[in-house]
Length: 268
Ligand code: C2E
Ligand code: MG
Ligand code: MG
Ligand code: MG
Image (cartoon, rainbow, N blue to C red; front, side):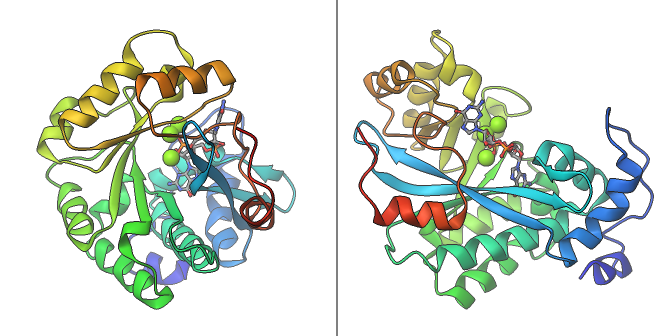
């Protein structure tokens, strides 16, 4: 629990940084309790094959059911969690909840992607804690993908290498924007590049370039943020085999996701 992480010095108690528009002092203090009190929950957004929209798996996306502020999106508390160190116990909660959910899906070809931060990868023993969870729930490592937006070569890459040697897949999220770089890719290879939604939605060469890059490095590419049939068709024409976005499905409760799996196939 949070007290244990505090005792180990992983979780700080000072919240020195500010984000606009929120009572972050309150939120920071409340988040630790929220993790322990079961106020976090996960939605599952399908990742589908192109062009047939067959469900390949899902990405787990965290939400906070705050007692007074209502449902909070991850942008309102993940950056805070990363600054304070609470991301470490938060990610442990997310991983357990997500892998536990994956274990309830009877089709064992389904995969699950979970977002973690570079800070998690820097924790000694992170890969081992993932291994313990996979064993506990009887999940083949290949079914799990961990998504990160950045990898620092000295501090985070050893965890990436260890996870990959266990068979867990690693993806670079929001690829093409933000902190990811070609240096990062050559210094610390991953399994998958997740094309940032801005490139999914733009009619410029970035989507094609990222797919070529992924292929030349022996990686797969997934497009996120697909909102229209035109975008889906274009990605398929470019050679993308899988994609994610509101056009296919919104992030869903576990119940709705299971209904999607057992019900009629999504329209192609
Ligand atoms: P992400 O990992 O890039 O996740 C994709 C985000 O895009 C999700 O927002 C998803 O709901 C949204 N999205 C999906 N399809 C579409 C679309 O067609 N159009 C648009 N406009 N948006 C789409 P969400 O759930 O608000 O998550 C935002 C970010 O918060 C995530 O971006 C990820 O970086 C972070 N995050 C979410 N859950 C977790 C978590 O459990 N742990 C950590 N560390 N970060 C998380
Ligand atoms: Mg992601
Ligand atoms: Mg992303
Ligand atoms: Mg994103």
